[in-house]
Amino acid sequence: MPSSPSFTRRRLLTRSLALGCSLAASPLVTPVTLASAPWDARLVVIILRGGLDGLDVVRPIGAKEFAGLRPELVEGGTDLDGFFALHPALNGLMPLWRAGELGMVHAVSTPYRDKRSHFDGQDILEAGTDSDALGRIRDGWLNRLLQAMPGIESDTAYAVGQGEMLVLKGAAEVANWAPDSMLALSPQARRLLELVMHDDPLFRDAMHEAIDLSQTGLASLTGGGELDSASMMNAMEQSMRPARGAGSASSIARFTAERLRDSSRIAAFSLSGFDTHLKQARQLPKALDQLQEAILTLRTELGDVWQKTAIVAMTEFGRTARLNGTRGTDHGTAGAMIFAGGALRGGRVFGDWPGLEEAQLYQRRDLMPTRDVRAYAGWMMRELFGVNRSLIEQSVFPGVDLGNDPHLVL
Image (cartoon, rainbow, N blue to C red):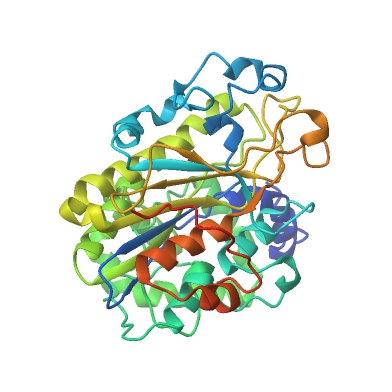
């Protein structure tokens, strides 16, 4: 790395824009946001960041065109209903499917179309609005639900997260918790920070302020001596090592279940890794393992509360019907929603199947959306919490047409 004056923070940030797609799909910190409420049902919203490939996860092996689009997937998966098969990485969820506690909805999407940006797609998903609201989004659909309900209280905050989930951001008070960070700094990374901060008063002064504030807490890791920037970073790295695993899907789900067994009624968190442009067969199972781990942990840890719980996993958009040249898939349109919980009617793949003939694909490349994913989430809230339909269509999801009740809730 050159050490010339031309290497500046601005140059570093400019180069980092190329990582935007990955950053949107893989946030560094996964906050959990919770809220308590007077009703007894529980709702867990999991945002699957990166664009889940619904055609791979819930495989339409009964569609004759699927073999031409994804020949490597036709023989794999676990049969669900003779037409759809589940990705093998989610086989651990099959007992829930057989118990009627796991289901899917296919060919759904938000109103977002064509530009296929992670950032915009996730904003639309979490805001619960249409694309016209981009740039004017101020709160999320779960928070608007809370604003309209009586008796809402914030749950206790256990830690301060480094990020917010738009889906629960807004005027209604909620609590936030984030697992411990797991940042390991290599010598190269330390040198990079020194280069970036050296000639930047804002960053340099902030680093020195952090050193001053951290003297008491970190000095014990270095024998009580004075901390310069290098020793502080070493101490931080040592202090973070014991926390490895704190941000895992199971730990996030375990904390969520603990709060839902108590006064909390709504929880939201995100899982990343679903942006599978390259070697999808290798990458997607890793991301799906997180989702399976989260759902199974919630099932175990919630105990009797599981029967009152609805879990819905949503993503910003689907992926292309065909693989690309690097054995991955590119950003698409319609995808799949996955749900679980004892309060829901599973054992079925919901949705109106659009077909996979080229003329049936959206722009001849993506699965065609046949229903708004917000309608399914809206009906869940309508049945779980007794929310008025007009409130959902006008305030929670402004402009959505809920349509007919899909009867997801028992």
